[in-house]
Length: 227
Length: 84
Image (cartoon, rainbow over all chains, first blue to last red; front, side, top):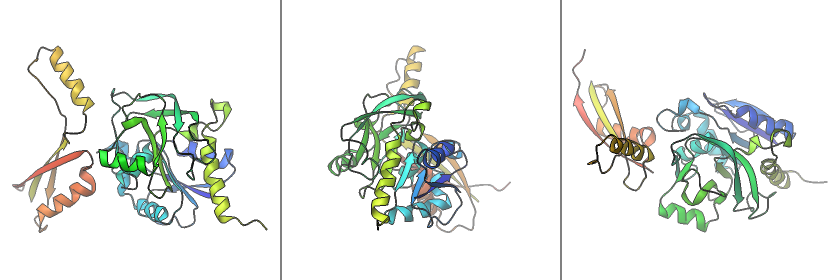
């Protein structure tokens, strides 16, 4: 399976994302600059964390207008897995691929620590290697991770099982502790925590690896025929 | 050339932790009459005289990039700018 790691000016988790896919998972990965206009050769799209365009205007707002985002939208429409982590999640909401928005943490602080995450929906292409209700340990590192949406949007997320991860404890003010959501179709996931930073016990934990394994497993089942 | 002044404010329903922190600070300084603080943004755009429907243009730019209507409201004023 071949992944594109989209790189914007100011991305800083692109190397971790690449490492997770290439070295830990043994799949193909390539960096793709934000002005690219063709993602047709990739099976999965990864939007890494960081501070694209210095978080000017709003987090993810300027990256959202990059040429590559039209291609990301096409990939999403084609049903390819699209994963946005941290700033990648913010970009996906600004692009309208996911509902809601990420606001400043309620205590106004940049928070960097490992937190407990509850797997709310283990029936997505991103979480099939987890168990529903399982609690995993994943690092967070954000100043703007306070998920906000209106009541109608929340009801829709809830009723369609689009809430994939929630925080075990409230620390940033996110609505109903939401940490990660998918689109209605289930092929676009945005999450604030960093699974790509939890792919080896050597670096403090490997609970994030199953997320990447899930994507590959789903893709193999759909695309690789066994003779 | 025209000068467009855009005022971006947080919607009523959205909490403003930054505004709350500033209000707390004002209270500590003795300004107890302050009952609420909301922090917004102010943008200035200079638009060429070649643009036809500036009103529609600014609305479009506000909706596509300058504001996020999930949490923000905006209003703007258009002024004739004196050329330098």
